[in-house]
Amino acid sequence: MADTVEKQLSDAAFGGCASEVSSLLRNNPEINVNWTNDYNLTLLHVASYRGRVEVVKLLLAHLAIDVNVKNDEGQTPLSFGCEKGRVSVVRVRLKDPRVDVTLDPGDALHCGTHRIEDIKRDLSGSLQVVETWET
Image (cartoon, one colour):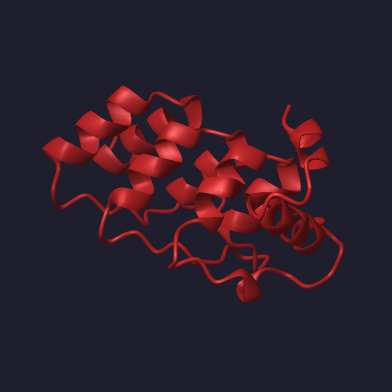
């Protein structure tokens, strides 16, 4: 049984293959960019968690992308990036005016809120230590 184009896109996003993601998006205008995998994670969740900056940029450029979608645990793609300490991804996400930081979990379970605040301060030039989070 052949994979759906959404599954192919998910695999490419997971692997960080920006050229394949770009090609799939360009050649499949009806693609569901908010498709979820078996774990109810969107492409943006996966790319954010894996630190795939170029893939995140490509997905954010798609008009149909839901940047604030939550998974079953209430986590947005932004909080997924924060959880893993993906500073580069979080920076890109915070520059997108559609991102609503108030939707992320307020508890310390995934350290999302604290890291978001630190990274927002970093974007304003007053905090540099967050660079050490990138792995």
